[in-house]
Length: 315
Image 1 (spheres, rainbow, N blue to C red):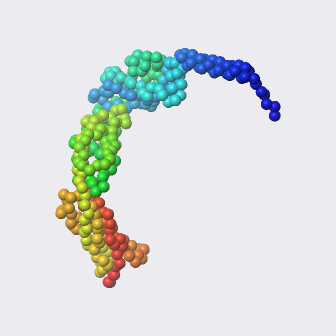
Image 2: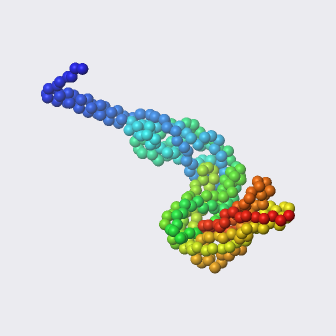
Image 3: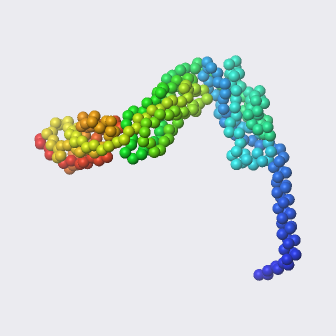
């Protein structure tokens, strides 16, 4: 294979040539991206100034198609998923009619974005709404949490929420589907003392639903835990024939963790251990597994001994 040998002068000329080509491409790209272009993007509608006494249902999708005029740089960013995240639509006119038009609000919408980026058209131009009387409902607040405690520490009592209810307003058919309202996820690590904090409630997914208040105070009691052992009698369930059943052993040893303040109050009466005789009648089981069907709130069971018991049936 032939190898082309270039002199130092030729190599220098070739290097200058490719450098000039590269600079020309960069200059052309820069000027091209600086020109104005029109491009289309899809985005969601964000409603503002909702009607006070009306509950509304949009009669079309909450996604619209924007025709945007901007530089080539912005067109490039659009391809990279950087573009207006939403279009803010004012619903004040719904107090007098059942539709809004984007063409009437195009100037105020553009004021929300940068001056070198301009929305020139929105499709569809008109949004129609169906109205009903706004209803009010109260539902309990449900806390979402992700808590990590220091070893030997844990939650020792029920979480307190203030307020523990939220007032929601909207169309009756929407309110009928809501039985509780979630908070944002409360995250905390290395916990070893009582928690008192505020957490925001999740924002409504539907534009025609509003909530009050938008946050709640949480109080989570936290204590150090210690180990305790209990011997709990085992009961037989599903003994419809009233057999005389003798369990060996007839008590189960439960090793658990309890808070220091609750140590003296935790007794055998707070727990219930059972074995199911149906496992013998239906599956010919030779041993019956022990199930704990009742336990003290906020106690943590570490070990159950034995896990299964022998039994003798006297007919």
